[in-house]
Image 1 (cartoon, rainbow, N blue to C red):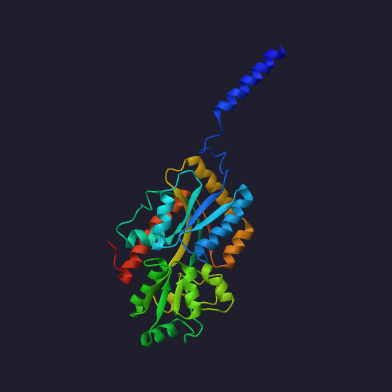
Image 2: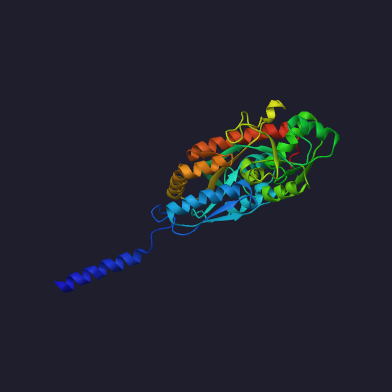
Length: 325
């Protein structure tokens, strides 16, 4: 009898061994190793800052490290191509936003990936009105003063890359009030802010997330925000539209994965990210940097992306920007 039991146990163990580990697309097994966040920004930019904050919460809940892989350049082309070609296993996630799903499809005819066909949305992470920041030595105390100064003096405005939201923001101001400010493109908000602080450029219309540390330290001066209403983070600042009617441009950030990523993996990732975004400490951290926490279903993010695409196209038309062939 004992021999028969032993044989049965051995048989069961052998069968279990032959089955091997749980398949990689099993939501139970995910995540079992570090997850890479591909970020289309340089260190110090809003996507980088937000990714690290979110990644910290995800590490706490999943027990797996979140590796932030900053890939600036091309207005999101480099990061997008890397993420689109990655294995669709849930271990490569792109922190995307207004650049990849707004500016790129509108301003560039040829891309090495299709933002709307090659990715599956997960959820909106955050959004924010931009903030207009200048070098403290610039003799402008408000937007009207900035416009007056730019009419009679050369002004260079920074961006985090050609045809990115920051570039569109400066060109929109040029178009609406008839200025000729010169655009200077950088590989992200981090290097742009360094040159703004040193006085190499005079103006940057960027996210409050990347500008916050420099404003708090007094290295830059803020003039306005760019949404339709004043923000809770900077209620003392007027909107650009209060001086320049029709001016509105905002930023947003969301997560997406290669489209072939199995549905159970996408669902588990959405569950973990949603839980992290509900954490009071993360919400407070985002708010202190001028960003509103996102959330919602993948379908809601997909619909939001389509709406943002239309809004970006309108901005490009208003700013009379050429479309790259």
